[in-house]
Length: 152
Image (cartoon, rainbow, N blue to C red; front, top):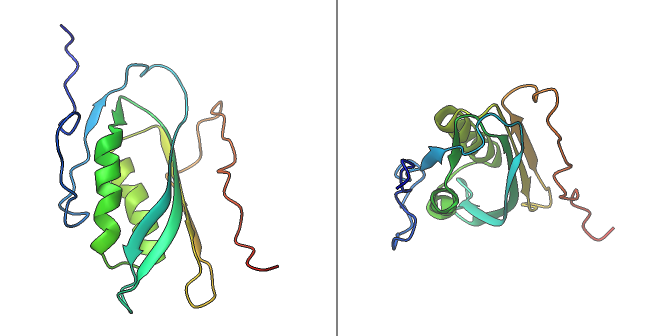
């Protein structure tokens, strides 16, 4: 038997948390804790609510991190991101808040998040945050999301 804890949400029916504060992120030991590598999560259909109009805002989020002692369990991350569907927040607050919470709880060697928000009022807003300078030997691919181009 392994001493690795079973993630709380894995294999269980799970309801979407009603708020990001209610959402529980689950972390497990990193099986390659001594290695320097990058993990990427992409959420191309992320949704939150405009705090002014209450209308949905849509974004393509890209989260890159270099794990330390733990890694985030993907189902708990999916539930956490889904909890923003009924959450009011400006693009900047939502994007940076997600990055900071992951960094504070998971304690990776490095983390960055890109929030590529679809236009609201005719203006696309892209928000970027990182925890600091990346580790020297870490390979950083482009996040792969083009800037909004509209009709031309």
